[in-house]
Length: 516
Ligand code: PLP
View 1: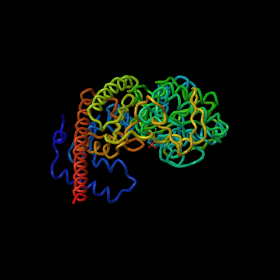
View 2 (view 1 turned 90 degrees about the vertical axis):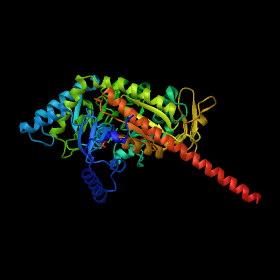
View 3 (view 1 turned 120 degrees about the horizontal axis):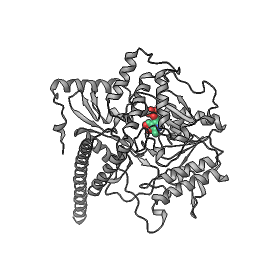
View 4 (view 1 turned 120 degrees about the vertical axis):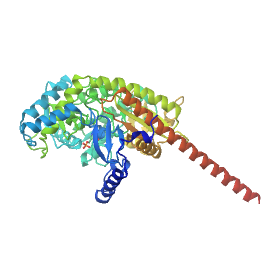
């Protein structure tokens, strides 16, 4: 097992620490309070290669954050650097708005090769501002223009970005134009049953919202979903549910938008996460890894939706040639080297090992993921099983026929949980423990491992290693994580004993006082 001492790159001098601390001090004095990763990860990266980052203090870290999933090939992969250098050396313009260039032409050709055939054959590619959220905005405008409708269907726990409409779809801002529907999940199933039955109930709910005259929701412009929710806590949608969403939307002429900003380019063990279910969406929103570590975002959609006016959604930075070249190299490398398959194999092995860890430590409530998109949910081991969050009230109210012979009568105050689901069911999940997840993140960092936190309660430790991670590196990642979990679990148990001791002492004191 590796300890803090082993992660030094050998330049851990007083001078290096002085530089490191000075930069961090100036950052907190000068940068916005809106900064996020920088708070939990007080590191100052100066060099990076593959899975490894070296900090200004000379310490080395294994990076399982990967630029929030942008680094399919890890940091500074040779094929990416070579592609960038080639553009630089060629004298090509670096930013060309949306003009045609050989670099962009090559990017589109490579991208189309990877897309689900039903979409690739009739695809239009729209370049947007370089963030994923801008592509989400563009996709919404596209389907609104194409259908003449405004409402959007989205799912609880979703994350589609930080602009206003994307926030609405993520459930973080309230707007009547977005209807949130239950996303299927096993551990905190909104219907309290999980598995195939929970997914079936979630699909039935969606159907009844669309068809029920009492829902008060006029025909929507589109449905947006993540095939695996990332920021929502690494929740993979079952393939059957994905196919049901495709059937439901197709039958009602509702464009289906797959947000593959985080799941794309091999991350989940298929080139695109929709490939697992064989679903062909009408629209795909792509960003992060498609730019090979540089900013790039596109919307890909079927040609019959291409009825928008020129200028409906523009942006200055749609022509980043370095990002397109880095992206082409990344897409080709993942495709040619079978890195999606590698992610599937290694990811399932890592999940198995993490599930063994979960059996050992009761602070881990759930381990889940797909490919190299992995989440470990931390819970309060002493907490009782929870009523399931976001039950009925999160989606709407009124009697709803959820299909398959079941009927739920729900009001906003009347949540549906495992407890409500009937006899013979497993007890519900224990309460999320964001403080334990944050402690594990800190302990990981001490051991030279960078992980992200996510989930609706920030109680999920997330691993997004590059697809190029070796078996040995994966073993080192799991070793460090296991060490960190052990340290946090032991401290938690000690704290709990102390708490119980204090509780016993105060009860004893109270009894003695009463007796006196
Ligand atoms: N969609 C998904 C699924 C995401 O995970 C994210 C970001 O994490 C976004 C959209 C927004 O992308 P960006 O942060 O680049 O705007």
